Length: 365
Image 1 (cartoon, rainbow, N blue to C red):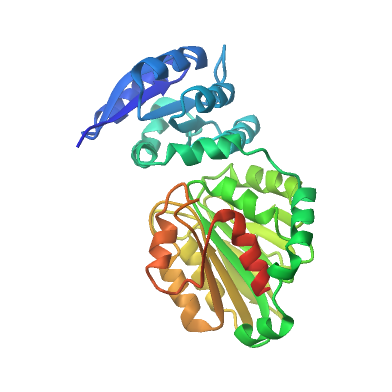
Image 2 (tube, rainbow, N blue to C red):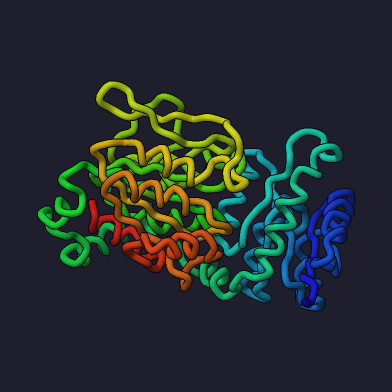
């Protein structure tokens, strides 16, 4: 099999050397060049035609975000961003995800020379996954103009007759129970979540619990960004808070998101028990915890991502009570791993393009 050709772009000579050494240790990867800034990167991408580019977010001359925009316009290539966990770094990372980046790797805090080895495995896995990505889909993400919530409000009015099932039909599948929505996603997830959550009405009759595979320091920025775009409230989940309808709670990076009974209500429970499927937060952990809630019907959604996190949790949800399950289609998934694994269980009720997932959710609420 041909090796994956990688171009490394970073203004730090130390970082270029270290990342090159990490990837050069892998037999399936060939580092074909390095660049010190975005201008140099563009020239080398056009000349060397790498399969994947690792791109630092913060650089002089032409920074990572500006370089990414030009890459996706002039020479579309799968890009893995390297980002700091500073406020500006996280905000720029999400801007990059919306501009067509495949995924990102967070640089460790502290002494780089001591800590960078921690990301070696993650970097390799994401470079390999990026090499298999459909660059056309990434470019399409980059070219999509962000639509305001008012667009989705008008869209929902136009589609209201088709989108909303009768209350009678909703009660049949749910046994008349109230609903809870649980969503799991990974690579490509920030853009997918934006597409889905911005289309949900503010008066939706269910709380929403979300696991997005993401390291500490990034989930709060993700929640803040989505909250500014959505009709519903979106926030990073906090220990002990009661879950309420019309609010989406995003699991904090580094913590599993669970629920626990508090009187007649349910509250957020965060813990740092062992990783599941290599992740914390884990979709399986969320789904399994929510499966224990009695007298609530569950709507589970699994979207783009590597691996099969959420599949075992989906089975548990099905065993424990009324469930409607939705998976993102292969056509719109940046990585068709998690949705494919979920579909293989034969428990999925709807396979939908990401633009139609909100419509499917609303039809069951």
